[in-house]
Image (cartoon, rainbow, N blue to C red; front, top):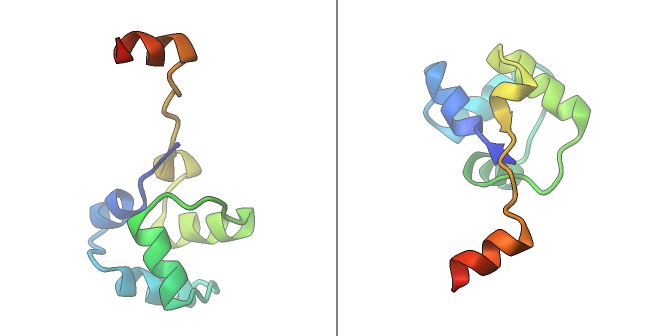
Amino acid sequence: MKWNLRLVAAQRGIWKAAELQRLLAEHGLVVSAGKMSGLWSKTPASLKLSDLDIICSALGCQVGDLLVHEPVPSRSEVLRTAE
């Protein structure tokens, strides 16, 4: 999965993690600086659905805007490219 939080935030004029952190707090999701940094800079390994719902509400977006499916190459494709 591709995590597009920064792209979606930028499309709404939010350029810094701290700005989004404040917006999320206004919507009831208090995120530590460390967790916010992780959400901002990389794809989270896990995310509570309730948190995802608040992120979508705060940004005025859909889950599909934040998470985009990226097919995983099959084993045969990986082996073929390695040759």
